[in-house]
Image: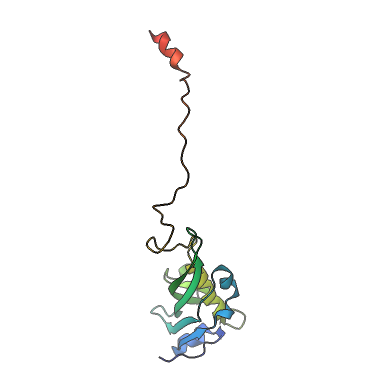
Length: 171
């Protein structure tokens, strides 16, 4: 499949009925919130497959690939991390109740035109994929977890037992 220009706004219901597929890239400058957390090194590769599942629900299957620059929380150096995110979205309409959706589908709200902003959706998925505490692998990190020292515990003071006097009363 060749790379095409991805739409900014996507009508998931109409595209699912047509069984539309997209395979393209989104430029890194489009992700302002994500770049504050972890700058992108290259454009984000996105593959979308729209369709109808066995229950008659409109489903958008998204595969997202990105390369981010993260700061290791162990050694405080930057490193490059590749991310592959696979998600399935189901648009919420008057006919579809959020509580009745299968667990595999993530609900997505539509705007007043029945569309969803694709760049925001992709950015949200990548932000959720970034680990809370990013770290190198132990083998790659100059500050190995085995050599880290968090301080030494001082021995407790030898205080006399306050109940030692009761021991003498027993005799």
